Length: 206
Image (tube, rainbow, N blue to C red; front, side, top):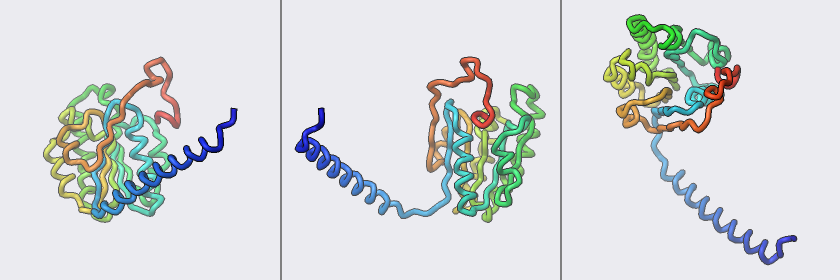
């Protein structure tokens, strides 16, 4: 049964008023946002998509012609699509710790040495004002496992160039990182195909 024209008109009028209120609210928030600064973004939680979100921002940044740096902790024993796409890009400096997952190496001393060597590259990026965006992928694990000194990392983040954006990914972000961050997103896991016996999929998982 078709909706009566009077009811349709009334619903359209209500919708228009609601959207006008919404637009006024959004416009007011946009007008109030006057600070221009480099952001610290933390993507954490047990859900899938932390690194994917970070590399989405990398793609966006490169699209705008920004110079970017990427440090991947933990990963490195298999080819990932992000490295294949951005590893040779002229606007992206890309470094991978290249030890694989900690549960594979089972060698704490080796992991610490690799983390410190990789952090040297990260700290250089965090001191370089010509790098607009820095991604520290899986950094949280380096702090959770005690491979990197937390105060050293926090100090480098605090003292980075004022216009530089930093994106940190990984589970169990420390309270200090969360407090320092400008934007924090915690991804929640509702379902994951892997736990139903599905192999990791090219393009989706790596």
